[in-house]
Length: 214
Image 1 (tube, rainbow, N blue to C red):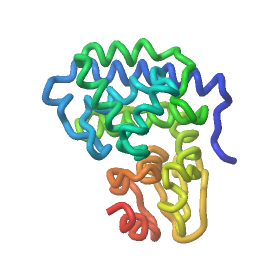
Image 2 (cartoon, helix red, strand yellow):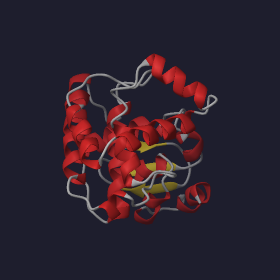
Image 3 (cartoon, rainbow, N blue to C red):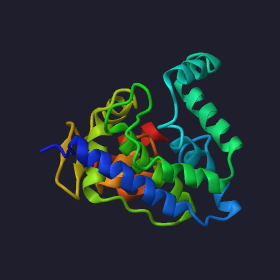
Image 4 (tube, one colour):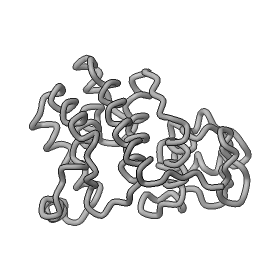
C-alpha cells in the first residue's frame, strides 16, 4: 500500500515541519549559516531563505522571476532565494519561516504534498552537513518518499529506472529490477538526487543508482 496523507494531515504536517526546522536552525553560528548544504549552489542560509519564499511568491512575481532566469526553473529558484537571503538577517529568516507555518498558500503550480516534501528534504540538506540530527515523523517521510519517487518534474522516475526500492521502515516497494534497500529518509534523499543518502543503503541495485548520482 502506498503511504499517503489526506489534505488536513498534510497541512498539519507542513505547519509542524516549519516550526521544527525553525527550532533546528535557531541559534546556529554565522559559520554554520554559511555551511554548504546538500542542495547544490545553496548554503544553509540560502535553503532557509528558499523555504520562506514558497508562501509569499505570487503569480506575477513568479512570471517576472522566470523571465529574468530565461525560463530556467532552477536558476529562478536560486535567484529568488538569493534575493530573500540578501534582504533579511538570519533572525528575520527564522521569523519568516515561523510566520508561514500555518499558511495554506502554495508556490504557484505546486501539488498539495510539494511543500511538505520540500521541508523534509531541505531539513536533511541543512542538518547532514552540520552533523545535527534532524528527524521528521515516519509517516511524513514515507508519504514524501512515495510522492517524490514518482515525480517526473523532479526527475525521480528516470533516476530510479531499473531498480526496485524497498523500504526497511514500512515494507513499501516501487519499481522492478535489482533491489535498493534502506530507511525511507535515505531513499528519499537518493530519489531527490542527493548522493548523501547512498551510504546508508544496500542491495544489488546500489551500484547502478550510485552511478547515476555520482
